Image 1 (cartoon, rainbow, N blue to C red):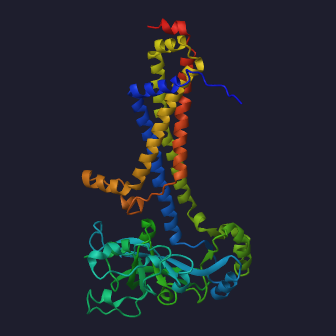
Image 2: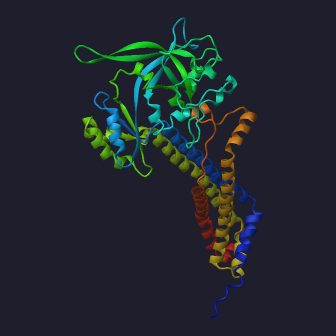
Image 3: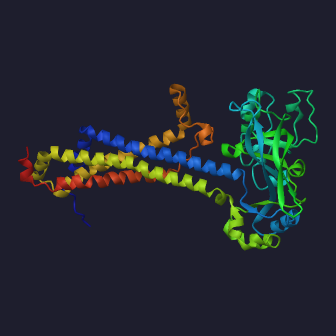
Length: 477
């Protein structure tokens, strides 16, 4: 079977397009514009994806899959724990109790004997149960032997690692006796785990270390004769047993932990064996939505408000932080839209370049038409030129964006050491390093989208060139 041969003049289209691309240096500006746009999108969204992933992991590390607030005076914990763990899809259950207090802290703003007060939330937990539902205890790392290594305290270990000490509420003698061997720490003083930030904030000559004490003000609950509750402040000496660092500076600033089986009895006056917040871990294939009904039935037998309003009392860790997580997601989407305008500006550059090229090459187009070039051939020349600009810019933008995203922290260090400007302060963005996660499929989509946009912006100048009449084009001055 004989197929029709292409016209002899067919190769001139690609040759002319390449010649225009090579000889017109203004095309390089358009290529650089597309490169900058694509690279910016890839780098910024890689940082946002990494920030979002690390932020979710950081928040998830201090919370369980499901959180249920219930009446601590009506629900027996041990009995309810056994009933809930018998439900298919639930792997572990524990409790936490919470109370609020304040820590006196001398600051530069303090006048005379007055002190500022740092508000804190005292969380009582059961270490043997908490390990099964969250990574809170994994953040409680032992103190180093030397104060110079203090910055390494509390660095979160990988998710599959185990705590380096079985009980973070037991003071390790090698750490606190070396400070002052003559200091006697009474056994009745509660042991607490505080954050690295709070330890630095409370220390006078340096950060607090295990074995050192400070004053903690809490509110004790009691009953009046008429049965109503009343709260009165109480100041106690507490001893630091360990420090933690979750990575979330907002969380670390206001949370300290006690053991409910030991020191927690001092802070919580609720009846023994009851709860105020259930923390539940689910199987990986289960969701809070599908588990809400069986949880409401089981817990509702003891706390009727849970059965009456399960949507409000039984919530996921995502729902508890929904405003924060939604803000990050919205910011990511808005950045993607704004950054894509950089690509559109570069595409307008392609449009302007091709339009100017058509005007300058009007007589050359007339010559091509007189030699037999078809309107489709002229159209193809300028379309191929615009497409090559878009493809080269998208490809170079993809490669440069991937490179910068993979080396963003060395670049940050170089900028900080050269110009003295930290583009990612850890005290603002919660992380010590810039987190990045590169979604290569999404990056390819951004690059392809930029190339397609360049092609679309090349259509109008190409059509204008194809519609030029040979006689009028040859007469053009």
